[in-house]
Length: 193
Image 1: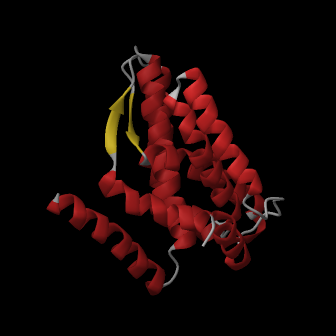
Image 2: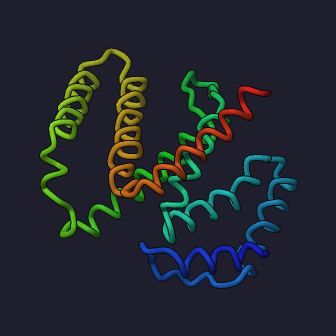
């Protein structure tokens, strides 16, 4: 099955859908070929990631629930990468969390009328808000502002991805069972390796 067919099938079954113009593989194939040629011509292997990022952004806009499940499947397979400036990140799960945090913000703003006040007034939600406020205050007063901002941002995307999106996506026992297997199988593979 081609990538375009997978995207079209995903679009049809998605409940949260945006009308995007991509309906065939042609645009994606052009993007892949262009990034490969650019990567070799400019000797920049990171350009090979452009089609992957484009596909992730597209899937996030069409059906972010699949990306949410993908995040959990990739957590056991993630590794830490340190940049030359001293900052580090976990790949590929943290970039997925960044993307999902942005998508969650758009989703929450688009569905503001459907959100229940009961969820936002729940004691755990209120404690998480207090936790984030405390970290913001600590970040403002920190000596190393760059590391503190990264730590504060990490707190935000962890809370948004694992708490808020988890609440909105994991509604039924079948969805929670699916999530369990999506974490367990890669975790077992990692343990065996």
